Amino acid sequence: MTDTATEKRAPRPDKVAVVEEITAKLNDAQAVFVSEYRGLTVPQLAGVRNALRPSDAEHVIYKNTLTRLAVREAGIEGLDEHLVGPTALTFVTGDVAGAAKALRDSAKTLPDLVVKGGVLGEVALSAADVKALADLPSREELLARFAGALQAPLVKTAGLLQALPRNFAYGLSALMEKQAA
Image (cartoon, rainbow, N blue to C red; front, side, top):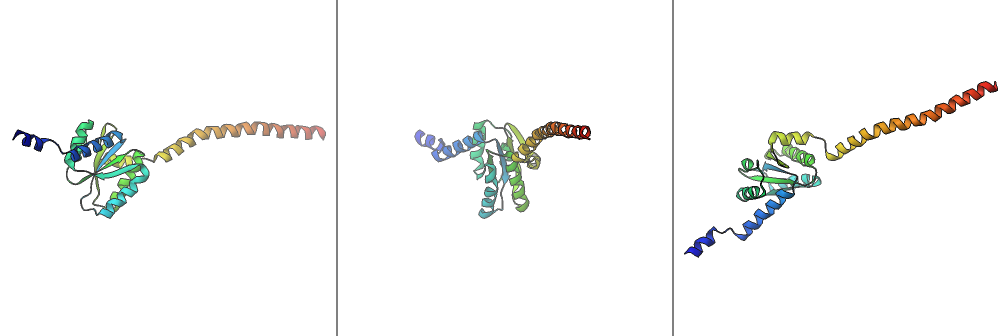
């Protein structure tokens, strides 16, 4: 009887594999967002996944009990409180602000999609924090602004350096015309 009781307590290999998969994704992700998908159809969920793909984000549904085990195993705090009801996890390995925007925009068109919160690195995020992240400019836009800020002084310097010989040439030309007359 002891062997049978032990066999029932041992976790099933398929569940252990799922927990390991979630743990690996949690460790690899820069950010993880938790959302509730109650009432969404499969095509609507596919639309959310497609919207997240350009940001290198993956929207996946796992059982909450297995997710809680993986969260504990990964040592992440702040996600357990969001794992209530039908929840989906968004693992972001690319543009965090872009993924937050995609989730926010999807939630606008799909009222049944509710962003509950998440984790950015080691920091727990509330739903308001995820919304604030969504309001940030994308990585590409920030890089463009930075490049523009670096370029502006160089353009001014180049203009000044071009003006010096040009003005000298105009002055020399005027002096030569004055002496010729």
